[in-house]
Length: 110
Length: 116
Image (tube, rainbow over all chains, first blue to last red; front, side, top):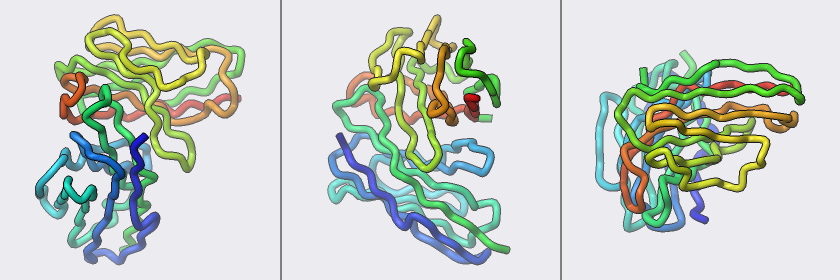
C-alpha cells in the first residue's frame, strides 16, 4: 500500500514562531488532507489540497503532486495550535481509503 | 461543529458486553467510514459504506459489526471485545466514494472506548 511519512515527529515552539511540517507519500494520489487533532481527540479539517497552494489565516499548505510531497506552514504560532497534525492521502484506485501518516506532535509554549 | 455527530463520546465496557456506537452526518453526504485510532498508531480505516453498501472491509475482526441503514446513519456494533480494542473510534463522511472521486472526508469527534 501507499506509504505516508511525516516530519518532524515532534516540534516544540515558542509562541509567535513559524514552522513547516512535511508530508511525503510514495505514490500518486487524488486526495490529500491535513488535519489537526486537539488534546480532546477532535480531528479538524485544515486543508483539502491534492495539488497547489491554499491559505487560511495563519495556516497555508502546498502540495507538489509530481514530487509527492506536501507542506503545512504555521505562522505566528499560538498555544492553541498545539496538538497532532496529520497528513492523509487517497490513491485514485481506492474506494475512499485515506491512509494517514504518523503525525507531527506540535507543542507551543507561551 | 463538523456536521458529523458521534455518540456516546466515552464508553467503558466489559469484554462480554454488547454495545453500539452511533454516527450521524448532516452534510448530505452519501459515503461513511469507521476509523480506529490506537495509542501511538496512525488512524486505520475499518469500514467504508457508499450508498448504504459496504465497499471496503479492512480485515477487521468479526467482533466489530457495522450497519448503515441509510446514508445519514452509521453504527458499529461491538461484542466480546478484547482489551487491545480500547481506542478512539472515529466516524467520517464524504460526498462520493467511487474510484477517483476526489472528495474530502469530514470527521466526527470520536468515541473513546475502554475495554475492562
